[in-house]
Length: 264
Image 1 (spheres, rainbow, N blue to C red):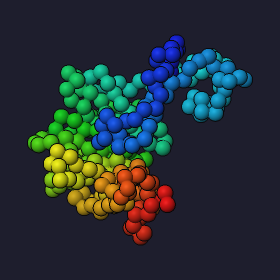
Image 2: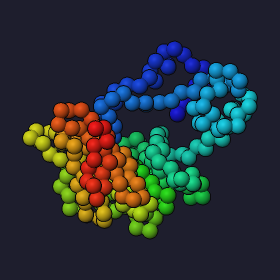
Image 3: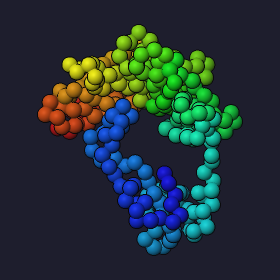
Image 4: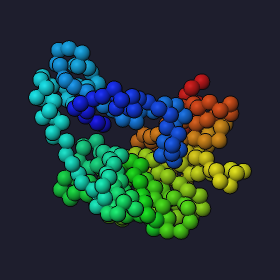
């Protein structure tokens, strides 16, 4: 989110939705995606500036421009791991723990982190490579994501807890895997990257980790790829998948009913 004090027409045209094909690992979207939100002043509590979305972002009790300025000033800077950039990816329901990734000094490495007001930023490290990224955090503070390995070009999904540290969810897997969501019971969903006829290309297929090293494949709706967006406390996974004709459909998956196309 960006608060723009002096908006310009040129600046705003660069913040419209666009096709996010730049990195299919982190943004597996085939349709326009919101990249950044800008809130332009001045705030008018009784005019066009008083919109439901604006009140929801800044709070629902704004009365004057001064109230908005004070609310924006209460945004807390959490720092970095030594570099210049910090990205927050997830937050617990209570708002007391946030997770994301930050660059280290020299800007050559990126590490996942968790942050609390009491302890500050905690570097989660990597699985041997130069980078790790956060996928999600549970309300208990368990973080899942993925990391580069010490050798080769593989990336493996990880789970981090304060008690056990960073653990590889796919220690014996020769494919890259990413963890993207976790539920209250510690069940993790994500993707594994499956090889294709072209050795330079792999496609993502959704899966669920029941424990370290044990996965259940969710599969696809007939196309080459699927991607999960979330997992409920009952174990149901929602996401999207290509179908045989190349279109993309929403799905829900459960152990009982398997993969169900929600777009039919």
